[in-house]
Amino acid sequence: MKKPGIAVDGVLIKDNKILLIKRKNEPFKGKWALPGGFVEYGERVEEAVLREFEEEVGIKARIKKLLGVYSDPARDPRGHIISIVFLLEAEGEPKAGDDAADAKFFNLDKLPPLAFDHEKIIRDAVRARD
Image 1 (cartoon, rainbow, N blue to C red):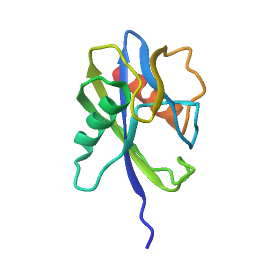
Image 2: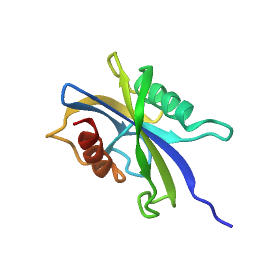
Image 3: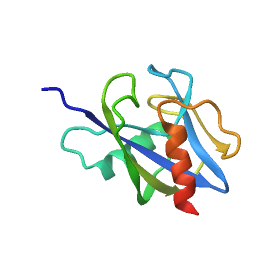
Image 4: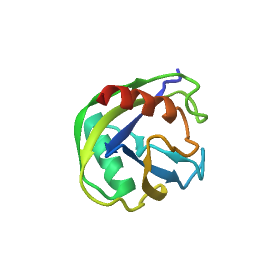
């Protein structure tokens, strides 16, 4: 029986800017995305989002709250991947690491083309912080 994969994404919004990474690998190589990745076996999703965030942008973060669960079977071309998304808070300058080719802040009203369903997630995050 096939089962969906579980991923996490972290949303860091500061001063009307959001931190994104440029994907180093397929799918969506070269597109911008929220920092995140797959949950490892035996790992809590809260630990996974903080680990992935630090691996990809070099910043230790704290979880503010759960934003939501994104489970559309078509959201990821690799298959049915469920993403659990957290709003984060952190200080520091991002530097790309792990699966990221670049990491930087973008104005919320001038986002680049995004991977996966991250445009929807960012819209939800903006609404959640208001």
